[in-house]
Length: 63
Image 1 (cartoon, one colour):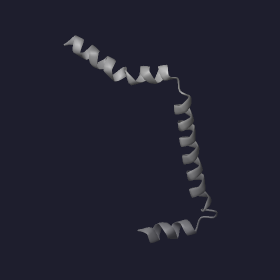
Image 2 (cartoon, helix red, strand yellow):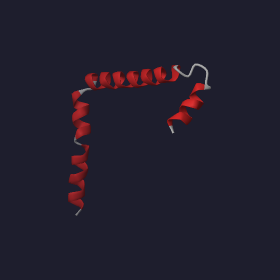
Image 3 (cartoon, one colour):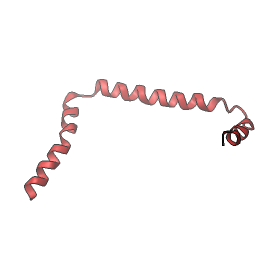
């Protein structure tokens, strides 16, 4: 299986750039996510974390 993929990739010019681009996108995404988590308002985090509990209370009241 790998020899088929390797054979096709050898025919593409500058194929070595694709893994570097993928790594760069992956790294930028997680650095951005980490920055968002660090700078997120604690009030927003608390509000969003209580959403499942609020829905559960509503379901219990309907029964």
